[in-house]
Amino acid sequence: MKRLAYFISVLILVIIVFISCEKKSETYASDEIDQYYSMQVGKFIRYRLDSMRFTAFGAKDTTIFYEAKDVVEAAITDNSGRPGWRVVRYLRDTLGVKPWTATMTYQVTPTREALEVVEDNFRFEKMKLPVKDGFSW
Image (cartoon, rainbow, N blue to C red):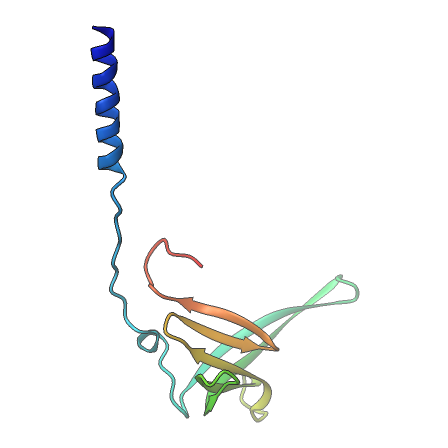
């Protein structure tokens, strides 16, 4: 009787393991990277920024206000042969008295699954597909 109960419990355990170990694949349809981050030559984004600068060894602080503008300058090809975009960042004061001054250039390369940005020779993945809640990279 004990053997029969042991055999039935092992059989039930094996059946539960086989049923629960079913391979499940999640399919998620997501838009292309271009739908989230569309680029074309001449497109620009303007930001109004502020920063806090500490002087006198941290005893005094000064808030500096300025505007930034990122302009897509040209369509380029990187060293791997992938198409990308060259973006130039311009800065000026918030009053608009001084002209826009180019301060930095960075490269944006959309791939099939990610959006790569190269700033100061550092490559960052700014966005990764699929775009959904709880997904991190």
